[in-house]
Image 1 (cartoon, helix red, strand yellow):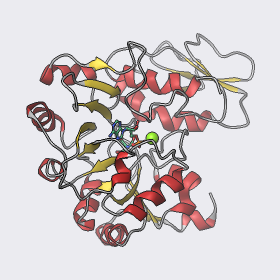
Image 2 (cartoon, helix red, strand yellow; image 1 turned 90 degrees about the horizontal axis):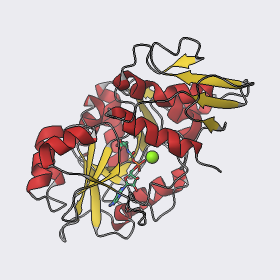
Image 3 (cartoon, protein in one colour; image 1 turned 30 degrees about the vertical axis):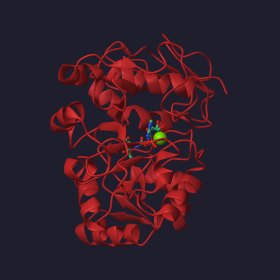
Length: 319
Ligand code: TXA
Ligand code: MG
C-alpha cells in the first residue's frame, strides 16, 4: 500500500461519516463498508458523480449500478413496488437483497445508474456505517463494489486502498464486511421473479416469501443482468475448481474438516456463512507470486454455497 492511499483511509467514527456525507453530497466519491462488500459510493442523482464511478472502476457503461437507500419508503418513492417487493423488503431489508423494479417517471435518479434500462436496482443496506452515511449525505447512494471492473470485490478498507485508493476522496474503514459476498439480485420487473445473481440472502429463503424464483440464463437466453459477465471476481492467478489436493505450485483453498492439508480453509467447521465471509479475503491472500495457481476444493451447491460457487466459477472462467 502506498502512503498516498493510506492517508485516505479513515476510521468510520461519527465525525468522519459526517465529512463523508458532505463529500458525497458535493459530488465526490467515497468508499464505505456495507454488510456485503465495500461500495464505491456517489450521489445517485448527480450525473457527473455517477459517471465518475464508472470511470474509476473502468466499468462498461452498459452495466447498471445498485442504488442504496436509508429505508424502503425512500426506495419505493423512486421505483414502482408491488406486493412481492413489499413482502421481500419487509422480510430482508435492511440486508443483502437487491430488487430490480421499474423506475418511476418522477424519479430524480441519474439515468446513468440504469445504463439505458427502464429499471433500477435498489437496496437498503444493514451496515450501521452505510446507514449513517445515507443519512449524512441526504441522498440515495449509487454504489457498485469498490474494485476495478472484473476483479475480486473488497471486504476490507485495505482491499479498497490497494486497488482504487487514488480514485476516491475518502475510504471509510468499518472493519471486515460480515457477509463477505455481494447482495442477491432479484428481478421483479416482470411477472416471473428471477434470480439475476445469487448472494448473501439465499434463494431458498426468498422462495419462502414469494414462491418460485427462476434462475436467469438457465434456459440459455441472454443474461438479463448485464453485470453477470462470465469472467468476473477474478484473482490474478488461474483458479482450478473441484480440486481434491494441491498440484505442483498450487495453493489449496479448502472447506470443512476434511481439508486439513489446505493452505487456507474457508471454514474448518464447514459453515457456509463463515466460508462466504472469508471467500474474497482468502482469494486475495493466496493470489501471490509465491503460487502458480489456486486450487479450490468443492463447495456444496446449497444455501450460501450457490453464491460462493457462482463467484468461483466466474473467477475460473477462461481468460
Ligand atoms: O452487495 C452488493 O450488492 C454491493 C454493495 C456495495 O451494495 N454492490 C454490488 O454492486 O455488488 P455491483 O455493481 O458490483 O453489482 C451490481 C449487479 C450487477 O450484476 C449489475 O448488472 C446488476 O447488479 N444490476 C444493477 N442494476 C440492474 C438493473 N437495473 N437490471 C438488472 N441488473 C442490474
Ligand atoms: Mg461488483
